[in-house]
Image 1 (cartoon, rainbow, N blue to C red):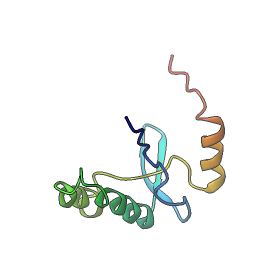
Image 2: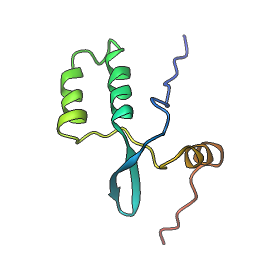
Image 3: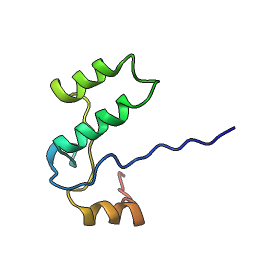
Length: 90
């Protein structure tokens, strides 16, 4: 059985703007990330039947947002190397 890996990085996190904030967690995105995400989705046979619906959710309705948790390259690499800090809930 052949191992297949998902490439996590669709686009370099440059030129990001705040897209949303959910319970204090900020999410950053850009048009370049959205276009790269759609290109990645469109390049697979598994998603070709639902590509128009995904494109509508990402580009028009903005209900599905490919994003980063950090706004710049420093935050991105810090997250990749050391992970996210633990959040104590209780």
